Length: 134
Image (cartoon, rainbow, N blue to C red; front, side, top):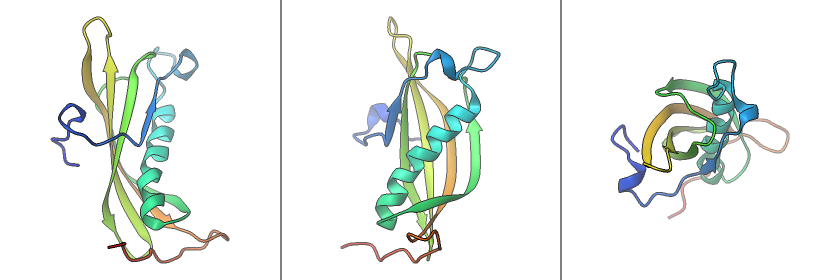
């Protein structure tokens, strides 16, 4: 999923979809950045868990760009894709799009991020990521 990714020209399914509510806004009336960051982390963990075949923990937010404000009522779609797999870590790109303005619908990219997760065992210790299935 590169910078030219568009949910309108793709059959890729989002890892997460959610609508922010009035309780999720900051004092400016926009959705609080921390709220959005937590959902990006959840969305990124979906393909990481699948690829690791088990538990993962977030170890780094490599980049996070707020491209446009998010408003109450926007339908947010979080697209997540594994971009790198190491011995114990998985790097995931997350692109967030907002569907807004139902009378004159538009889809805009509001956020992009890259996060790194580490595979962990039941005690929380690092573990190796299994080889990819054929």
